Amino acid sequence: MISKNTVCLWYEKSALDAAKFYAQTFPDSSVGRVHQAPGDYPDGEQGEELLVEFTVAGIPCVGLNGGPHFKHNESFSFQIATENQEETDRLWNAIVGNGGEESECGWCRDRWGISWQITPRILLEAFTDPDRAAAKRMFDAMMTMKKLDIAVLEKARRG
Image (cartoon, rainbow, N blue to C red; front, side, top):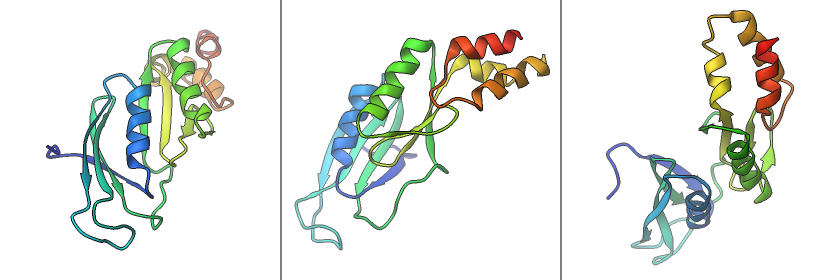
């Protein structure tokens, strides 16, 4: 059953592939029901996969195989808080290594165009550090990176 509040993500024809990848990659993720189109529609035919229910890191989602009309952009992203460099590397490498691409400051995009922020908790904590100079040093270090390096961020925070 689709939740009352669900993120709907538009895919050309590969919502199930994306859902399976997310379920394999992110903890607390799974693939739910797959719904076939009850009739023909502009970019598909009756019986084709139209909707895929899935969960990404505890967030209920539905993938809509709606055709090529709309593309994802960075104005929407999933932010995944990581606990250590191993988790940061694993998630980043899974996304980028599966046809995705790197971006700046801990952002990357998967092969379906969804943007992800793979963000160590230490960085999120630094943004609220009462020592604003330490927060700025860590922020400035982050601005030079693609995949975030926790050791470098911590060193910058310490000064």
